[in-house]
Image 1 (cartoon, rainbow, N blue to C red):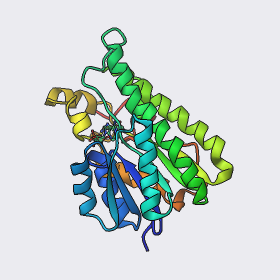
Image 2: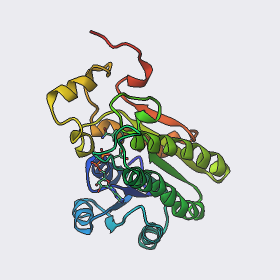
Image 3: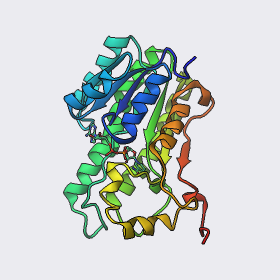
Image 4: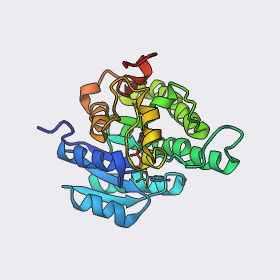
Amino acid sequence: MGRLDGKVSIITGGAAGMGRLACERFAAEGSKVVVADLDQAAVDEVAAGLPGAIGVAVDVRHSDQVEALVARAVDEFGRLDVIYNNAGISPADDDTPEATSVDVWDLTFDVNVKGVFLCCKYAIPAMRRSGGGSIVNVASFVAHMGAATPQVAYTASKGAVLSMTREIAAIHARERIRANALCPGPVLTPLLAKFLSDDAKRQRRLVHIPMGRFGEAAEMVNGALFLASDESSYMTGQSLIIDGGITSTYTTPE
Ligand code: NAD
């Protein structure tokens, strides 16, 4: 018995990093998976390796493309149970308020906030027709804490994802549509690796992690799997923080 048997899941940002691993894990747990990401060849490659998966190219910033993504999922599999809003960006030139350009701010919010909004906008009616569903929105531990290594647009965007998730949860709770935020700590995917390019930068981050190591993608996907599945059936509007202890801790061990 798979933990997602009979379910249909859309996973955005499914071609790389945590999203790619999530596609593999969700499929292994019995879900039909719609691998959604920017590049058709990349999503096809991920989908080809998975039983009952399809790849759909989408830019989550664009309303018409997201509407078509949800329609394609329903056309192909007849229902929608899970949308895992994992696509996100962290531009290299996101910095302090003074140093961050308006273009970088707008781009970050277009992908990280508007993208999540659009995916919920079109997934919710499809979930309602399926009798309910689970929305998993990827925020970050930085939605809960500030850092002196500034990424002001990214941090603000993840705060917006967290508060949007609570509101969606409240609005749709009686329709059996749940919404929770997954808040990963630092994981060395391509997204973070470009910031922590040398050992000194990595060590500066590690000092603040009680467990003394970065997270693994699999450790985050385990949380998403729980939120997507019926195992979390009484949980909505919550933030699942998987961060090696960062947000719970004021000082770390020597
Ligand atoms: P990643 O960069 O490895 O993968 C992100 C994927 O999203 C890529 O395949 C990319 O093509 C896709 N994507 C980007 N813009 C898109 C768009 N407009 N439309 C569709 N797809 C788009 O990132 P990751 O580290 O696996 O991060 C996944 C999520 O986890 C992101 O939301 C990120 O903010 C969040 N997160 C990451 C970390 C970390 O340390 N890596 C920590 C906390 C939260």
